[in-house]
Amino acid sequence: REPKLVSDVYELKAVCEQKLNEAKSTIMEAESMIELQKLLEDTVHKLVQLPCSEHFRTPVSLKDYTQVVKHPMDLAMISHKVRNYNYSNREGMMADIKLIRENCHAYCDSRFPNLPP
Image (cartoon, rainbow, N blue to C red; front, side, top):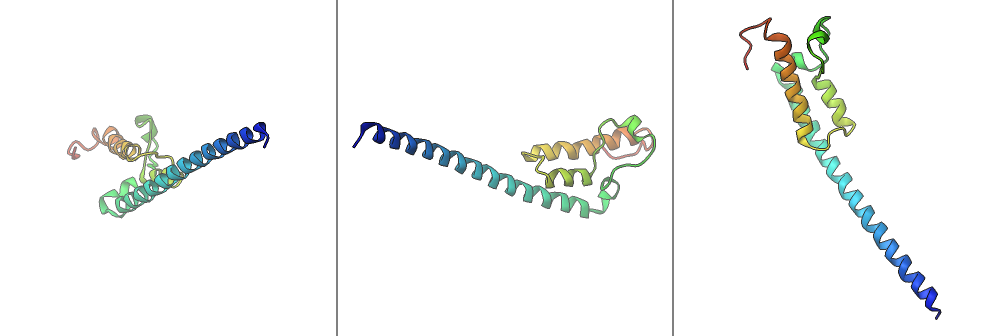
């Protein structure tokens, strides 16, 4: 046996094990993202089914809306972001849901003073 050949084999083995571990990590991350996406899709679907979500399902089309609301958000956009894996955690989607609420208050509070908090 040549010492160089044996050393090359051990080095190749180490590189292969490292690449395998990296691939396993990537697979585990992808599986987590798929599970998260399913959870978020289910949540958006349930929100869209609520009768009180009617005005939040699609973008607001009022002419002066974007003069008041600088970062529009709606359930269709959230659904699109879920389908495209734009959320890496539940908190990201929750922030967009809160943005819908904040936008609603920013636009409606002066028009509808009895709007619930």
